[in-house]
Amino acid sequence: MNLAALMARAGRSRPDNAAIAVGPRTRSTYRQLARRVSGLAGWLREEAGLQPGERVAITMTNSAEFLEVMYGAWHAGLVAVPINAKLHPTEFAYIFENSGARLCFATPDLAESVAQAANDSSAMQRVIVTGSSEYAAADGDGIGLTDRLPEDPAWIFYTSGTTGRPKGAVLSHRCLLATALTYFADVDPIAETDCILHAAPMSHGSGVYNIPHVAKAAKQVVPEGGHFDPAEIFDLLPHHPGTAFFAAPTMVKRLVEHPSVRDADLTNLKTIVYGGGPMYVADCKAARAVLGNKLVQIYGQGESPMTITVLSREDHEATDHPRYEERLASVGTPHSCVEVRVASADDQPLPPGEIGEVLVRGDALMSGYWQNPEATAAALRNGWLHTGDVGSLDEDGYLTLKDRSKDLIISGGTNIYPREVEEVLLRHPAVAEIAVIGEPDPEWGENVVAVVVARGQDRPDPKELDGFCTEHMARFKRPKRYEFVDALPKNNYGKVVKTELRERYVKPRA
Image (cartoon, rainbow, N blue to C red; front, side):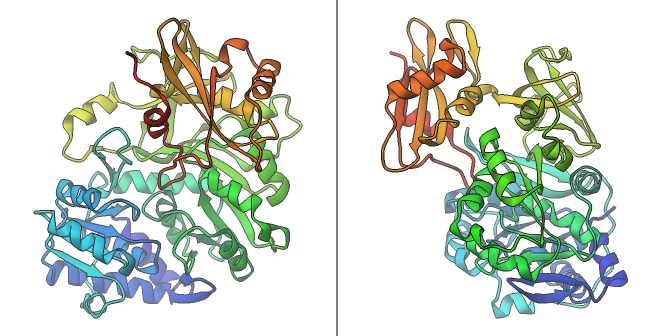
């Protein structure tokens, strides 16, 4: 089983279908892309001297070449190591060293940083910059598809590393094929006339979603800017029928609030799949009001890429359901390719409504962490992936996440889940964004601290926010302190980095 077989099949069966567009213009057909993939694979094996199972680093902003290199590596039996383009050179160097990648492909904007990182890595031997004569020459006689076993590694996904060195989740060909198939079953059907717009990083979720679109010989659209720009997305929509794209909730919010949305033609917008962080109920309703019934939510991790649960388009549309808002606040039901349970500390399943750790098992899971048996054993215990997320299942099988286990606040012996507090305060008209964290307290154990981005120039009075909280939730959950900021710190995927907020606003216990 080799995922590159999907590309080879598309090149044979739908050779004239548009494969990649950059901005509004088609760059290559599937005949041309499959030929380039095969030629690059031949060069990787014969000229670069890489053998099946070796790793190839891909350090790129979103580009057409990302797909050429990824499928070229797979065609040659190699393992792709896509790296977040926004990382620091020292982080690039660590991933080069940890993965043992000897060759890296980089886009011109990252050439200097990657070269610096390569000099700091004993593993990295060669960096090829896309658009260069060297990249154009990385072509050879096409080779046949290299045989791979289903369990062979295809993609090493490095975690964000917010709690230490990033770990490399090993995603096999079987894992990624299961992810692609469950996209068709649970997320969104794809026609060969449709396309995916890569607005989010291709090194992450958007790149995972390239696979089902290749399987259908559908088009991949890369913005000319190489990154998320609401105005550019609205400009591109008229050129690309059947557009779907993956977005973090913060990206959806930026789309909805962008001035261009008022005059945008959304006819060609088919689906927005959002995930990677909480979409608050108020934001979700606002997005539906502006964009229409085009939303699907997924919940996943690098260790189970995009494939833990899904809140379908139908769930978003079921406004007459008696528990509509509860479902909108959930992350949906398990994907078809996995089992999900909420478990106690000893991994026993808990009944509906009880809160515990979210566990997952199935084909769409990592094989383990690259060269890290201790972390693998801790994460994959008793046959289940331990996500570190805390949540509860209702009687209908909908999973509601409370928070990461490390974000739980315990005050006076009572659990307080930051998202509950955040959901309430976001309903206040003067609050644009919020993050809730805990701080040590000698009497109560922990207190609740709210870090607030105000909507507009005037900051709301903390007493006013306090009163609003009292009206809408239990008094013990109210923040004891409010901090006002211009912007919340976020990582490269739009998630609020609460570790940074704790460092900034929480004084250590004396």
